[in-house]
Image (cartoon, rainbow, N blue to C red):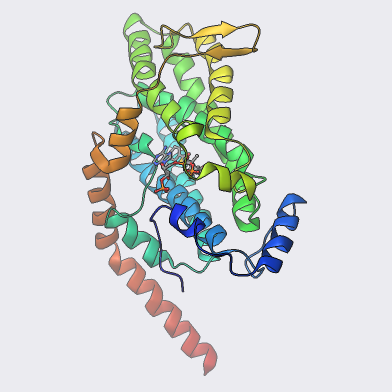
Length: 328
Ligand code: BYC
C-alpha cells in the first residue's frame, strides 16, 4: 500500500530516477500513445501524480453533489426534481469509478477519504461557493459541467488506462448534465423579468469561478510540464480555459445573457475571445480552504461518513457471512 502523498509532486520529481532503462521504455510507450496499465512498471512520480489527480477528481465529484443536493427539496417541478436527482446520482457513480481507478495504483479508499476529511486532500475550488437560487442549478449544469467536460474529453486519452476508461463513461453522462443545465437556463432566460434576472445573476456569480476550475495559468502551474510530458494531461490549463470561453460565449448570446467581463472581445486574427484578468488571489484563497462554504462542505462529508458507518458495517458482515457459507 502507498501512503497518500498529497504534497506537491515537485519534490518527488527531483528524486533520482530509479531505473533509466525502464524509464526510457515507459516513456517510449507513452509517446506511442499506449495505455499504461496497473501492473506495468511506472516511475514513482507518475504513480504519485496520478493518485493526486485522480483522488482530487473523485473528491470533486463527491463534494460536488452537495451544492445540488441543497436544491432537491426545492426543485420547481417534479420533472426538474427527477433530473436533478438523476444528475446527483451520476456524480456519485463518477466518484466511485474514479476512486476505483485510484485504488489500482495502490492507495486505499479509506486513505483517500481520510485525507479529504482531514483537509489534506484538495477538491475543485468550484464547490466552495454557495447555491443561492434555483437558477444556480441551471448555471452549474451549463458552466460547471461544461467546464468539466472540456477538461474530461481530453482526459479520455490520458495515458493511464483505468483513468481514461473511467473518463469515457463519465463524459457521456456529463454531456447530458451540461445540456440539462443549459435547457434550464433557456427556460429562465425566456421567462418573466424576475426569472431573467435570476438567470443573469447566476451567470454573474458562476462565470469567474468556472474559469478558475481549469487551474492556475500555465506559467504558474507546477505540475503541468511533467503531466503533459507523460500524457497524464493532454492539454494545458490555459488551452482548455480558452476553448471553454470560445464555446460558451455564443451560448450566452443565444440565451440573451451578458457575460460579466467588460474586456471580453472577439479577436479575429487569433480566432478566439480575449478576456479580462482572472482574480487569482481569490482562486488561491479558495484552494487554501478559505472559500465561502469550505467548512460546511467538509463537515457535511464527515457527517455523512459517520452517520452511514452502519451501512458499511452491515455490508461487510453480509459479505463475511456469504463467504463463510460458500466456504462451508
Ligand atoms: N481546484 O499544477 P496545477 C465535476 C491545484 S467535478 C482546486 O495546474 P494539475 C462535477 C492543483 O491540484 C470535475 N485545486 O495542477 C461534479 C495543484 O495542487 P497540488 C473536477 C486546484 O493537477 C459534481 C495546484 O493547484 N475535475 O465535474 O496539473 C457536479 C497547482 O495546479 C484547482 C477534475 O478534477 C482547482 N480548480 O492541474 C458538477 C479534473 N486547479 O495537487 C460537476 C481532473 C488546480 O499540486 N484534474 N488546483 O497540491 C485535472 O485535470 C487537473 O488536476 C487540474 C489541475 C487541471 C484541475
